[in-house]
Amino acid sequence: MSFAYDERIDGKLPDFDRDATIAALQAAVPDLAILHSTEHLRPFECDGLSAYRTLPLCVVLPETIEQVRGVLRCAKARGIPVVARGAGTGLSGGAMPLAKGILLVMAKFNRILEIDPIACTARVEPGVRNLAISQAVARHGLYYAPDPSSQIACSIGGNVAENAGGVHCLKYGLTVHNILRVDIVTIDGELITLGSDALDSPGFDLLALFTGSEGLLGVVVSVTVKLLKIPLRAKVLLASFNDVQKAGAAVASIIGAGIIPGGLEMMDNLAIRAAEDFIKAGYPIDAEAILLCELDGTPSDVDEDMQRVEAILGEAGATDIRIARDEAERTKFWAGRKNAFPAVGRISPDYYCMDGTIPRRELPKVLTGIAKLSKEYGLRVANVFHAGDGNMHPLILFDANTPGELDRAEGIGGKILELCVEVGGSITGEHGVGREKINQMCVQFSADEIVFFHAVKAAFDPYGLLNPGKNIPTLHRCAEFGSMHVHHGQVPFPDLERF
Image 1 (cartoon, rainbow, N blue to C red):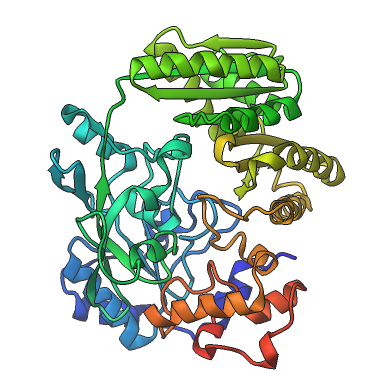
Image 2 (cartoon, rainbow, N blue to C red; image 1 turned 90 degrees about the vertical axis):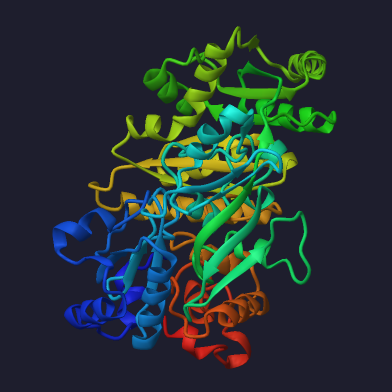
């Protein structure tokens, strides 16, 4: 089942007068930059997910923490919803605006505030690009480990909101494992700190709770990240397979041998051909699947583990194994993988990106299931994913101009996520739930669990004004989706239910 965005979410909001809202914001925050004409709002109508578009009531671009506090206090006083937005590279509709809400864009918070090479930390504003952190600290022999494929453009605030990962998250973890502290502003305009500059802090781990909360609990205004020493050596290996299931089994064999690569990625033939045509990375276009395995650390450890990995891949049925000759070829191998999404965009008018996570042992079974669903729905699927930690990114190819194809793309996407849950996985690994996967939350979680999620939301935002209608479904929505009954016949937290 698919819901039109405005009908399902915005349609339940009261009408707000744009002129009155702008006047109230100007009175509360006199120097605030506010956009409200259609041509100025158009660039903000969607994020990286382009199937749905909505123009916000207005866009505000604060430059100081006090301005953020003023905006949120004004929104609370008038009962107007607020959606926070970073670089707009998200892939689950989490930063899509509301037609009757304020879009709070943090792009002007783009300064690196402090670098501490001794403590191996950096304090940055949320609009700083992911890659810019590593570029700024490279002179100290340091880097920031999480590296989403969009790292050249995505912002650290958005990474915190979605708990982003990247091709090296197998060894180095997601955003939550690489930050020490975030400073946030609540809907009341209160500035609070979660975590600390130390490795641990007393009380509940609210930093972990907040990371991945998709803008539902507060607005990030600064982040303290952990930095790592640049490895002494890094080698990447490309292995070709004539069978996708063999490649999937090889992944489990590498991890089962006690080897933790810096990155372990997999692509199927459709993705291989698209990436090679776009990047010229040297990929074998006749292979049914390839694995990219990077090992990093001390030279002796890397060389020893590389020999072990080669032997494992050979036993697993690899038809060809190549080790990058130098840093230039290593970079090119990774460029093909990191540009797989835009590469697929060159061979199809539209594509729909999924983000399910599964136990590694289930990889062959799930790949077989995706192939069956592809035939059933009559749509091609290119598989690109972080194979080492089971985070899959099936790309469903379709043409939105062909009647019914968008509905079929959403249909197969939902079935793929439900397959992930069926084998013990999750509907997201790093892209978040947002708007796109909210129905599948009803499949993964019980009514009691969803009530608990609403309780957490209400503790931070009792008015339900921060990014309403995203991430956590209402029980009524789950009942409409057909996955559960309304909890005990009652609606918990009715103020949140109105969105």
